[in-house]
Image (tube, rainbow, N blue to C red; front, side):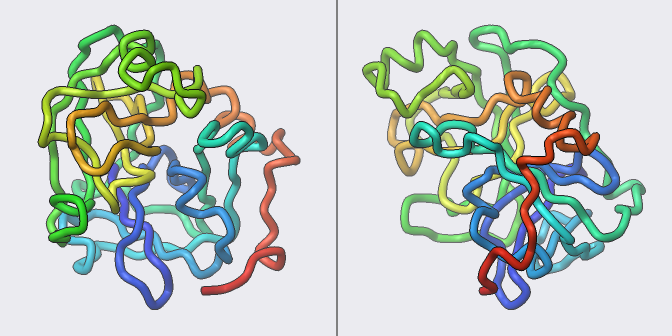
Length: 227
């Protein structure tokens, strides 16, 4: 009920997102960077991305001030809607992470991503239970590559289970809270951890944007090309 599908005006699903307030969607920066905000369609209240319960549009969005600086870092963004989401039995917001995850904590990933590398795709929302992998263990797997910075968290359970194309920007939930935003991985579920933007790590930035005190993060629609 908190999961949304981010789509273009004339395109199908390409990224996931999460309702965190009646006017705000949290997603990955790479899902929105370079697009024209008014062309974004936010599909809510459905398990089938082409059968929306409701459709909302963006009037602006924000990407993290240091997105991709360094590479793959701070891949988190906020979409502001031009109308308030109507909350009901199909559509609700989810609270932000209030604490850091413990190693091996259970977490739930949902999304409309491909069922495997290169497809097939799905129109039905998928759900999987994963396990949080500590940053230390995750860095050891990736041999301390710089793309895994302190703002990332990881999940891994076993080969064949994980995120794929189309899951980007989507929610990782643990303890009823939003703890991660799908960023990147070795596609798809080939035995490496998936990396997420840590919501707990970025919570101050999220709150500053929502309160209007992060002026350097504003994205004017006129600065971006349309689809």
